[in-house]
Amino acid sequence: MSVREKRTVVVVGAGPSGALVSALLQARGHDVLVVEKAHFPRFSIGESLLPHCMSFLAEAGMDAAVNGAGFQFKNGAAFCRGELQAEFDFTDKFTAGPGTTFQVQRGPFDKLLADEAAAQGVEIRYGHEVQSLTLLEQGAQMMVVSDQGERYQLDCDFVLDASGFGRVLPRLLELERPSDFPCRQAIFTHIADGIEPDSSDFDRDKILITVHPQYQDVWFWLIPFSDGRASLGVVAESTRFADGPEDLTEALKAWVQDTPSLANVLSRARFDTPVNTLRGYSADVTTLGDHRFALLGNAGEFLDPVFSSGVTIALKSASLAAAALDRQLRGDTVDWLADYAVPLQRGVKAFKTYVSAWYDGRFQQVVFHPNPTSSIKQMISAILAGYAWDESNPYVAESERRLNALVAVCEDH
Image (cartoon, rainbow, N blue to C red; front, side, top):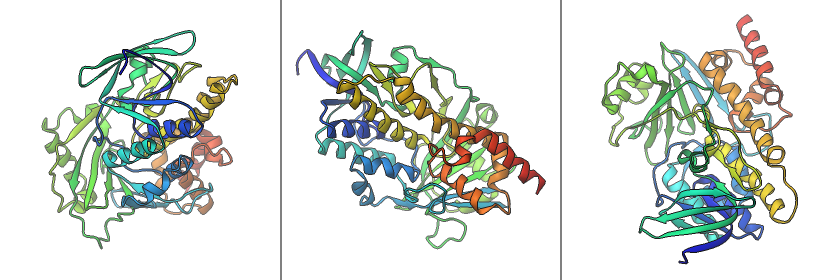
């Protein structure tokens, strides 16, 4: 490999947004190189997809591979808080589009998407890390080093950061700014869940979100996989964990045991995998891009795992960025604020409304209301299914005002 190399587009990261954007640009006839620090498959969280993801996978011609991969089918979300229970069927929603999707181990899922991109002609270099980056008047230069010690310079017309929590460009270009969300922490692992297939306490076709019986801002995810295993995590402000066991496995077990409904579901579970933690994961940036670069998915902004919006936002950002960059590379003038950042942020803003309202309890009042109006539930279901960019849905277009009005109605009934 040469010491210096020129490419049209360099994508940093081969996760879902990187695989999708590179495949979309390749299909439009552009030269694309993906550099990925890790070797796939590798572990990642964010395992419960939303149905809107399937629209973007279809756009890139990856839906057939995902449909045939044997992942756990998903058709909705179940919620539990003490004796209160609620379900949302994502096929019964306001917005047109796919109503089902999958719950996936991200290692094989991300590798599948990357392999699909490679099969479509995208070059992916695994074990290659971007160490420095300089933006030029036009394009960018970066230094890359492989895990074999190979070092080279990449010159490109445009760089797309799809590095997820690695947040390569925000770090190198000093674009980070504090999130306006509190510092929360997740403790999580994969377990052999031991749940009987015919259990009446758990529907494997749905993610289960359980609220702690005492603290409304503490919640658990339980995401079943197709092999009798599941992803389990607890999320709370970091201060909630301060007085608990230092051992992460014992800490997670203690929180589960403190939540009777979840402890019952997981009474036969085996904790056979190391427990991990992620703290202060919410992130924001000063800009999402300009004529030289764009930030995709978590590299730009990450909200919170509560409604599994991360992969959906990542894929939406890839779709928007590919369309805008295609136009720019063909000679059109692209306003990256108006043509990319603003459209992307419309949906992110809607998600943010419901994430914030989940933690302060307003949205929980809506979710657990015993007599929901069917048409309103369909609108909320559409958002939970990922269709947060459908502004014909009033709970998207005017998310804060509509939610507050709905909460007031719930309080009166």
